[in-house]
Picture 1: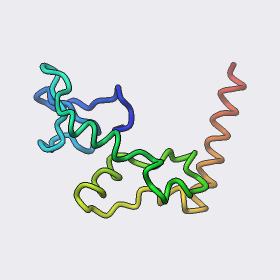
Picture 2 (picture 1 turned 180 degrees about the horizontal axis):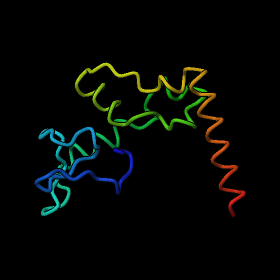
Picture 3 (picture 1 turned 45 degrees about the horizontal axis):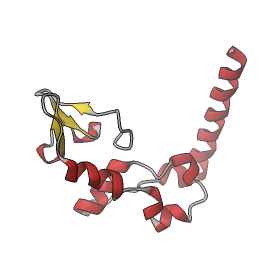
Amino acid sequence: MAECIHTDMVGPKGELYMCLQDVGNPKAVVGSLFEGKNNLRLISAYCSGNLTFNSPECRDCKVVTFCGGGCVNKRYRSKKYGEKHDICEAYKDKTIFEKYLDLHYEIKKKSHTAQ
């Protein structure tokens, strides 16, 4: 969700977060419903430091167009806090990726026949 500019998560006291996984973490608050977004440093870190083309692994990946670079939150947390996250494991597992493509095809096929 963090890569989507208009998908802020709202905490119980009106605090705004970039991602659902951050709700409840005071260090991840980017603003509030009452004051708007005002933690520009954190917003900038999410937006600029986690772009797909900044990652050599993503630039050289054959499936990057499907995953879009993976989870921005996991990428941010790996970079900022040194947490270990496999950002794109599902797309690199051939069995999972083939199932994903099959499901994607079926959904597209149904949406075209419904029109």
